[in-house]
Image 1 (cartoon, rainbow, N blue to C red):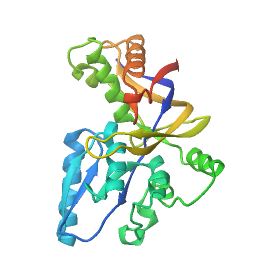
Image 2: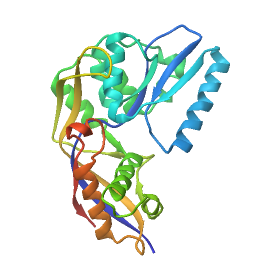
Image 3: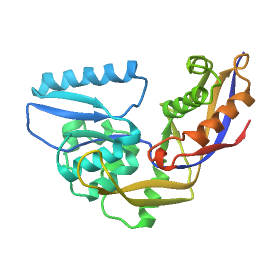
Image 4: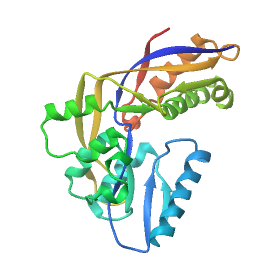
Length: 266
């Protein structure tokens, strides 16, 4: 029997919602970095089709590279400092203020991209960020409801299934459990917002100073649908807690960010 249950998580998270920013201009080809936002069989063909449409209209070829969320901040920060490696890249919405403050991004006229109505409200407002104090920034983040992706959350659960040897592969879990979100997004609430400045060493070049956004005292309520003769709700909650303890979600996971646990379910 297929059932649904509401799960309440509590975590510390670094980033989530996605948007796009143009970083450079005129050439016969551009490099575009995108992060895994959906299963590859859905995500990549869609981007490739849009890249072909773009080339047909502009004559500019798009060289696509998929960059993992776990290394994206470091690679983007390095690219901004060096001016090399990428022309257009995707970022988490909550990164926009910090990246814009570097002066390394190119401001675009959104009327050339369909105007403000062509963008999700949170994405649009995050990319029109101007100078503001910490109180204003917290209000912007709270009202724009930072989100985690249902796809990323479920992926971390499946990884926990394999890592903890519950099953050899995540296939059975993927077929039996689904994380439900509004257009694939799950909003979070939080009590504090902070920026963690740290020195990081890229694979090439000198160390660079980067800033990581994270949310303190955050919680997220979401619904899962599951087949109860495959996994019981108690087993699923245990898997979620294993994923939260050992894997996490969002950026900075290798540094201990993005950890979570089940606070309640019903």
